Amino acid sequence: MNYVRQLQLAPLLRKKSFFLLGPRSTGKTTLIRAQLAADVLVIDLLKSDNFLRLSNRPSDLGDMIRASGKEIVVIDEVQKLSSILDEVHRLIEETPTRFLLTGSSARRLRHGQANLLAGRAWQANLFPLVSAEIPQFDLTRYLTVGGLPQVYGSTEPHEELDAYVGTYLREEIQAEGAVRNLARFGRFLTIAALTTGEVLNFTNVARDIGVSPSTVIEHFRILEDTLIGFFVEPWGQSTKRKEVTAAKFYLFDTGVTNTLARLRTLERHSNLYGRAFEQFIAMELRAAIAYQRSPARLAYWRTQDQNEVDFVVGDVCAIEVKATERTSDRDATSLRRLQAEKELPAYFVVSQDPVERLKDGIRFVPYGRFLELLWGGGLLSGKVD
Image (cartoon, rainbow, N blue to C red):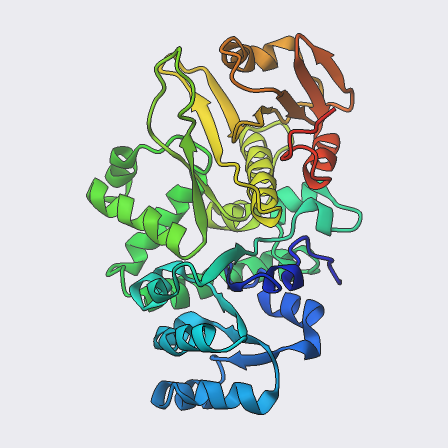
């Protein structure tokens, strides 16, 4: 199946060179072929001839570019040879060449020489498919198997996910060289999946897998650096109540989460289903913020007396997510607590209730309508009427 992605590369490259980062199998190579095609020189560092040539003689990069006659150059899997970034740096400074540098590990880039491009190359991210990219979007399928392109459209999605998780453990984590005990790290991944969306308690996780809290923190950082997960920090603008300071953590894909948690199905009225629905909305918000180049920060709000709002998007809106098919005023209790501080212009309860209504300044909206606002650009720009 062909998917029309929200991320548009050509407008970005007219402005600047870019790092394009995303987990494996999110479709970076397919996106480049679809949007840039014959207009660019593609140098794939997974090909041994390219890797060996440029690792021995980085200066050959300029010769390859001149021979191609192209002004835009894609270096695929640049983390495989981060030393090439010295030559990229020089060419950006001395020529009109613009680069698209793709990778699946921010950690390996940081530990290489990517810092030399600070300010000379911006960053874009590619995530799993979002609802706006999938014709005849099927929520139940997405919550169960996720949005990796090779998985969502597959007739054997669980086989694809099993292979993906195995490849990630074997290749990505081992390649980082940061985990000595891969079996123990595998147990950590299962716990990370089961606690996706919860406020992190590093001590409890450490006790469950038999390591120190500092090791658990490092494990979560590895997931973040390899783009397999992301933190949602507490919102810091609220002043009238004392907030907790711990972050929440989400894995990057619902299907990967379920596979790591050894789940094949989700019971419609279970807590696991509700957690998957919240993760789905988190993924949509994160992707929209990135693709629309919004400065908004995704956060959450929670007080020490356990009042919690799932998401706060910059200074734009607050969102409570409910998987229920029939909402009630009780679903907006925490939003009203936050609303009392009058910090934000819009408040939403996003659910699977088909009825849209407005009460006391809080909008109860079906998730489909909310996603229309999000991907239409109105929500992040503050135009939600």
